[in-house]
Length: 125
Image (cartoon, rainbow, N blue to C red; front, top):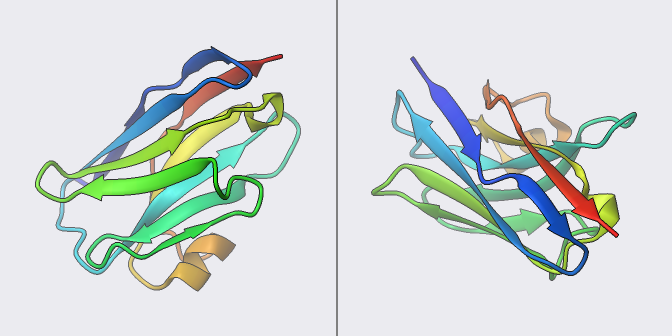
């Protein structure tokens, strides 16, 4: 059974940092696009960051570029999202996701094969 399990969310003050983790299990993710989405209260889910599980190339939403970093540890089966200089508008439920197709379909969400259940990040002003 494939599972993506997020952890690391919580409450942080503006300007602070958090690192989210995603434990990926149940299959090999070689060739997959892995990454993160978020959904703020009353808003649609949006793309945050993506990377190739095998090659390491990355993509970011403009709103987080320069502040967030996505990475993975293949040996541990983990995907991470390091979030620095957090802003109140970063408050959302963050979801880990995996797509076997491409970065383009990952960003559009219509190609995502697996989703985690999410972890809440709250940034206070």
